[in-house]
Image (cartoon, rainbow, N blue to C red; front, top):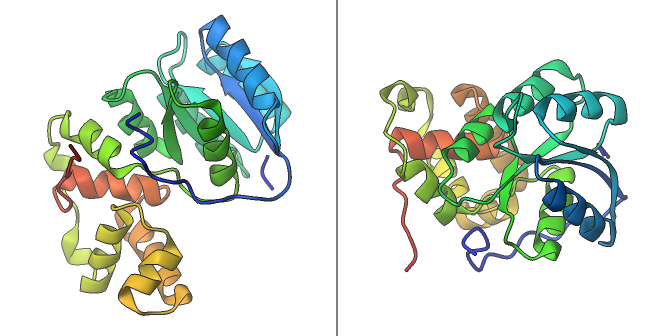
Length: 235
């Protein structure tokens, strides 16, 4: 294997398997070293390196080839958005990126997700939840918290250039995208629509291709930004 609010009361899908190798990129020395020690103590995770900014994150990811990079977004020299974009564009087998941020309504996060990050976590989350997010993303899933993501997108001006090419999606594909936006997994969507898992995988693949989305999280960002899905906030 390549390798709060954000909690929202949602349980992350269980992820088990080989040890996940992790690179931590954060410009705060205390945060970076603290996360390193805490995550090293978590089962199934080996922290193989640290980076103090985006340039170092890209360089260390190239040399260490971690399964996952836990990427801060606000860093000097090269921010986490551009570092994410560079890593995903350059590598034939790139690491998966989990954005970590202090601010729930951080516009940098949605930009990083649009650049191809597989999900995000807040720094205030318990370390076991951050560790589980790393494992889930390493297993090929997305870490998606619809209410928190919806708030982030809603805080940004609607970009007319981000309009969803709805004519390109079939009715069923649009329905699948809406269900993806609620945080449902492929098996849950299949059960909801009473179709096979393979059918849903095909629909999800078609949605990603037609929207030009890096992954399902990016597709959900597009759905929010286009207005196809209207954020609904709990509380």
